[in-house]
Amino acid sequence: KDWDDDVEEADINAVDDTDGVDPEAEYAAWKLRELKRIRRERAAIEEAEAERAEIERRRNLTAAERE
Amino acid sequence: MAKSEHYHKADAQALLDDRGYSGSLIRGENPALLFEKGVRERIIQSYYFKEQCFGLNAASLCDRAAELQFIGGTTGINGKPTSFLCLAFKLIQLVPSKEIILEYLNFMDDDEGYDSDAPKQEIQDPNALGKAGEFKYLRCLAAFYIRLAWDSVDVYKTLEPLLPDYRKIKRRTKDGFLLTSVDQFIDDLLTKNRVCATSLRKLRSRADLEDLGLLEPRESPLEDEIEEMDEDRDDGDVVMMEESDEESS
Amino acid sequence: KQHLMAIGQTGEVRVATVQEVRDRLRWIKRKRREAQKEEVIDLDARLENHRE
Image 1 (cartoon, chains in turn orange, green, brown):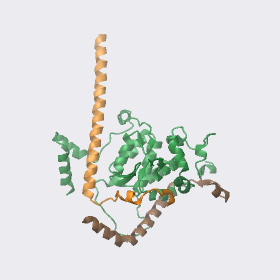
Image 2 (cartoon, chains in turn green, orange, purple; image 1 turned 120 degrees about the horizontal axis):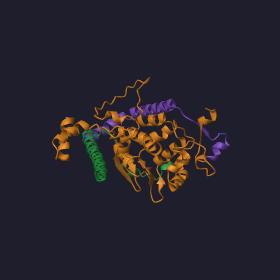
Image 3 (tube, chains in turn red, orange, brown; image 1 turned 90 degrees about the vertical axis):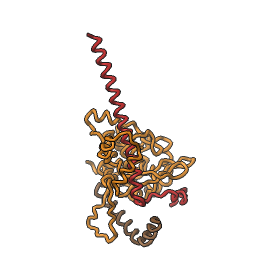
Image 4 (tube, helix red, strand yellow; image 1 turned 45 degrees about the vertical axis):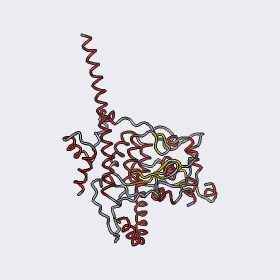
C-alpha cells in the first residue's frame, strides 16, 4: 500500500481499537461521557431559560412603566 | 431524468473547474468549498486520492471505506490528508442520495440468503440500537459527510441517535494515533467548530430548533437512570459508577 | 487518471443505487467473514491472551 506508506506499523498498532475486550469497562466509560453530555445539555437549557426569564422580566418592566 | 444525469465524473476536475461547476450543489454552493483550499489541494494531489479514489461511485467507495483503519484530518508537517479525509472529499464530489448515506451509516447484514457456520456473536448490549453500522469507520465517514452536507435539523436527527455507539476508533493526529470512540466523534461533530482539518458550519442551536417545533428534545438512553439520580442529588460520579455496576451484574 | 481515458474509458462513472451499495457492503462483509474463518484458530488464541 504505497499510498499509505508513511503509516508506521508500530504507531498504528500502539492503539488498539478492538471492541468487546472488556465490555463492562467500555460501557462504563461511555456512560461517563454520556452523563457529561447530558449535564452540558442541561446547563445549556438552564442558561437559555434564564435568558428568557430575563427578557420576560424586562418586558414586564416596560409595561409597568407605561402605566 | 435524462440518462446523462446518472453518471459522475471519474475525477475531481469538474468539481474544481474555475470556469464553472455544474454538478450537485450543497446549500446552493459548490460542495468542494466545504473543504479549505489548502486541504483541498493536498487531497487532490495525494496518491491516495489519485490512485484509490479515482472512478469510485457510491458502491465501490465502500471497498475503500471498509478498509479504513482510522479517522483523522491531516498528518505530519506537510499536512498530508488521511485516507479518511480523501474519502470524505470523494463523497462531497459524489453527493450520494440520503438513502445511500443512511445505508453507510446504518448498514446491518440481515443475513439474507447466507447461512453461516461462523459463530454468531450475540453480545448483550444495552445500547445495541445505537450500534447498527457494521463498519464503524464507514459509519464515521458518513457521519462526517452528514455534518458537512446536511441541514441542521437532519444533522441532529441523524447523528444524535449514534451517541450510544461506544465502539472504539483510532484517530490519526498530526504525529500519531489516539484512541477515541464513535460517540465521542459524533459529539465532536455536534459541538466543535473544527473536526478533521475541516471547519464546520455553525449548526443552528438545538434549543432554537426545538422552539420552532422542528426537533423533539433529545432523549438519552440513560434518561431513566438520571431521573432516579436526581432524586438523591448532590452525589457525584462515584455513585453513578456504582449504579452502573449493579446494573450490569 | 489521464491514461485511463486514453485507453478508452469515458471518464464517467455510473451513479450507484442504494441496492448496489447494500449488496456491496454485504459482499465485503461476507468476504471478511470468510477470511476470518481461516484465522479463527489464531483469533481464539489471541482472545485467550487478552483474558489473562
